[in-house]
Length: 251
Image (cartoon, rainbow, N blue to C red; front, top):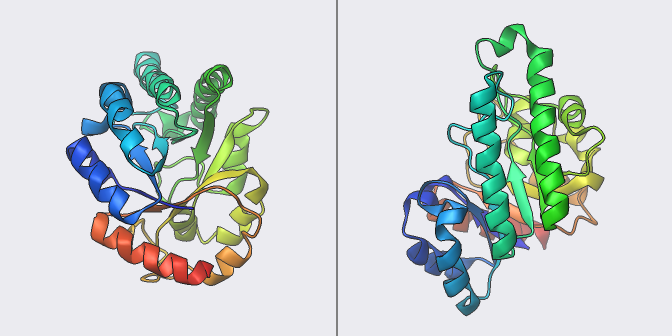
């Protein structure tokens, strides 16, 4: 199933973008921030969505969120924000909740092991609530950046080690690292896939086929994957273009 997701949608009226998504897509990964904070839209979501033939999942808040922060107050605020979003996601019937692993800060660069410990502690709290609520947590691999965590398979698995959480495989992010093939070795743990393209250097979120990702080869190696392909785009027009190309390749 092909879904759509975009941070650009999160500044729009929920009813309006719901109507727009339903015209072209089968599913929507709601980015739970801005005007679409999950606790804030929960009531409206439950009132409106029964009228639409869509499936839904959620991306946790990203802005100002760092579950690996070495400032305990900032980390606690981040985790609480994610836990509140997960609680709303459960009440809304959303089955997958994608989260980012945190990022390096100035103090983090000189205490990297402590950042990992902090992120793992945060993830354990998310895992605990996910068990209670029946919502699957998907940890996303990040793009090339000196501030990013979990940019390669080993560091992603290190954060998840011993925890019952899945992977959100972000194709574009993996392409910036030149590690798509290596990430595909973890495909048995994929519960969500983010689809977008780039030229291999930076995270551009280009439409499918406009960059260097070998999508035909990639999709061939994902036979047996039963989760959603979530097109992450800069807007609806790019998303529709990506969907057309992705459907062609899947066929």
